[in-house]
Length: 465
Image (cartoon, rainbow, N blue to C red; front, side, top):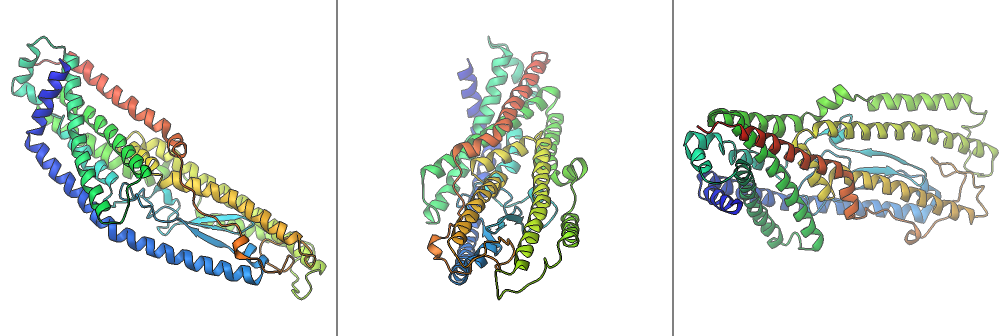
């Protein structure tokens, strides 16, 4: 019986004007997104390659001159543009994409967008995830808002229930057929965009890309199921289709527009943190206290003789300054991360917010990508420091007084650039992508089941006359 209902409802959807309009709109949106992605991505790749070339040239020059200068210089690693950014831009135009480090410390991350917490910024690039979050969520409601109330008005609902069929099977058939119809539209749009990108030569097909596209379709399917369930709920709560539509639109505005774009307000209201200016003041205050308590001669400078005792005092003071700054800034970075994670947890009451989290993780993008790069850079920095210390230990002309800010009391010998460890972003594994979002995946499935269950209970008591 379920198969008959599915066939009937799917054919009804396919032959409807709303399906045709939705199909054209989604394919056009996906195609436009792909066409806009290609030139912008090519420009980003060229800019990144130029930045990387300049950084490597500078590092080679430093290595050829003085290994200590290479170690104390603050280098900037810029995250490369993603080839799969057409799936989701993951707000990366606002997220930090530059990580500042030396052999002695990972200092900070930088974001061009500014603001106290760049992770809370939103983006509106015409990516697959944006199209699904805004347009497809609305389409899902259009396919279900009158599934019950509309058929009651046309008297077809009572006619259908006059057959030997349970209300649960009928409602589930409508729910599943609407979701499948929407996913057919999404698949058509994704296929059109994918063909444009592949045929342009800007991207090649691979197993990794296939997995990322599949992950996106799964996340989109869950979003379609969620909004289809909300549409059914609207339909069984109301007694006519006009009220059902109004209720469905309210759900779309709340869950699709308002809540996903309220991150900055939620964070500032519920989880406020200090400003970066306040952090800098604390760093400056710590520096002043250390300078006042430092032994006389700690700021003396005479680079002509690296074995002068003043250089040891200076190195000790610089290490203490580094440790003080590192403690303050690392704590601030952790507060930024916690603020974002708590805010994301609050806004996850919206299925669109959960969808964005899932698509970012599936594409290896956004916050999960940054956190992995941030963690990997700390591991690399420790390796870089060990490399430098081993190099310095081999120089008998060095006093081995480690100064993390200056090159006056460690080796002044050059080093072959090929021997210097280099940092490069490592691809995210499947576990790296899935483990941070398992809770949100379970939350999404639970919300679908809960909304459908409530709709079923209401439908059992629904007066079809």
